[in-house]
Amino acid sequence: MTYFGTNLKKIRQIKGLSQQAFAELIDLNRGVISSYEEGRAEPKIETLLRIATYFGIPTDDIISKPLTVNQLSNFSLIEASISAINKQKEPELQEITSNGDLKNIEMQKIFAHFDFVFIVDENLAAKSVYEKEAVLFLKEIKNNDLTIDNYLTSEKGKVSISDIFVPNIKNYAIVGVLGSNSNTNQNTILKRLNLLEKKVFGK
Image 1 (cartoon, rainbow, N blue to C red):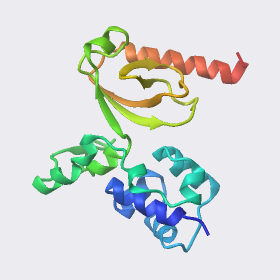
Image 2 (cartoon, rainbow, N blue to C red):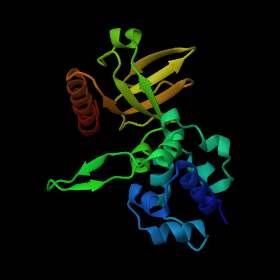
Image 3 (cartoon, rainbow, N blue to C red):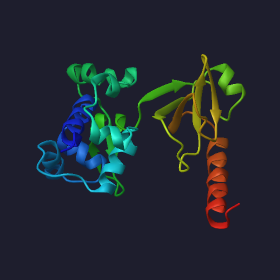
């Protein structure tokens, strides 16, 4: 017996997601999520890895021990405000589909992609490609991940941008940017080409 089902339900509830919304995030159907939570099924290895990676939780922790609310409540102010926003009124934001149609979108589904936001100040703008007041959407990363291009690192109250995981300090993957210049995209493309070259040629 594992704690996977209990932990999965706790993660989903803390994120404020329905079973359907949670299922869509990790490309499963609602019935599968329900069977996991009720202990009627155990996940495949690839599903376990997908969920653990997506939410930044070690795979051992998600199956071997009950996760505490404190461990799972490490979210940003914007996430904590979702319930208050929903009580006031439904956010007037719609998704444009690929064929040009408009449809309502669940804000929780967007917020589930990141844990924190950081607004770039003068100091960080001076030593990075991000403009002052750009908003960085962050996800805390515990272990090195070669698929990530940019990290925001925090040590002794100072933040900086790194293209590699730095051990023994806080590392946040930059999963989205709002309001920055085109150099960011060029920088990201160059890094991805460099990573591809390393994978292909081993250099």
